[in-house]
Image (tube, rainbow, N blue to C red; front, side, top):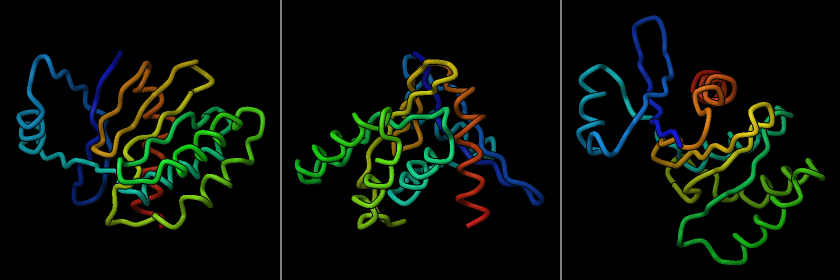
Length: 161
C-alpha cells in the first residue's frame, strides 16, 4: 500500500498540485508537514464542498468509480446507509451518482468536513484509492490516479470555479 499527501505549490505565475510520498514509520506527521512547508508547499485539505466536487467529477470520467463515502461520526446512520446502498449500485446504474450528489448537497460547504473520506476504483489499473479530508491518499498506483484525475479536479475547483 502506498501513502502520500497532496500539497500545493504556488509561484508568481503558476500553481502546481503535488502528491508527496509519506511514510509514517520514517517521519511523524507534524514533522512531515513542517518539512514540506519549508520547501514552499501548502497542504490541500478537502472540505465537504471539494469532496462533493470529486464525487460529481466521477460522472464525467467513466474510468473512475466511486466505491465509498465515509461520513463524519456526527452524521446520522440512515444517511450513511442510504449512501452505501446507492454506492453498491453505481457499477450497474451510473446515474445513481446524481442521487448521491442530491442527498449530499445540503452539506456542501467550504467550512465543513462532514465527508471524511472517499474511495475510488480506477478501472484502468484495477486499483482502489482513498482520499481523506486531510489530503492523505492511500492505495495502489496512487500517483497515476492523482495525475489522471485528482490534480485535474483540483485545478478546476480552485481556478475555474
